[in-house]
Image 1 (cartoon, rainbow, N blue to C red):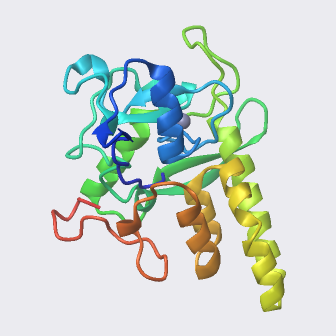
Image 2: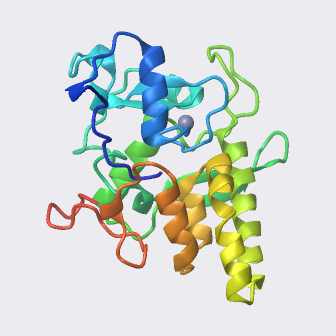
Length: 250
Ligand SMILES: [Zn+2]
């Protein structure tokens, strides 16, 4: 899950822009954070929703509060519904280095035999951190593997499938990178990778695949708008974002 920093509220003539409708928000939020779901990091196609990180109906924040608005895919939005999340019980992408909380597991779908890639809590976490990681997965049901919609659901959830496809893309790209032998070849590759990162989504899979390949990590981290720069060291390795706080505060 990509850690993000809150983008400043857009200004008009030096004054904070005020919003009266979702259309306008959606355009500005897409510019601020890119066209990916804030939770699963899947690439958003034509149909996507403006999402309150903290549910609007809980009355905690104004429905127009810029810093609480992000883009989410349909399955994440539907799974989240009005569940409660905060930084004492969950890891949130605009507060924590959420890249550090999951690893990814490849499984076969029970019914159709297709492969799925799903997040599980990272084994390096403490027991308390694992509990928060599990809560974060449950918040938008990121580990759900489902081919057909069950009666109550409004849409098919193929996040597991898209994530597996992205996993394959990132593995293939890493293999390509490792075969490049000259600085010229590497420069040419680095000049083309950004559009593919945008198109593929699933930020953490890119980071995992290119572990140790600093030049590529730099582009992956910087090509998406408002990735949290305090979540990475000078060599673009992920680091805790809140190191001086409580041990569980990644
Ligand atoms: Zn999503």
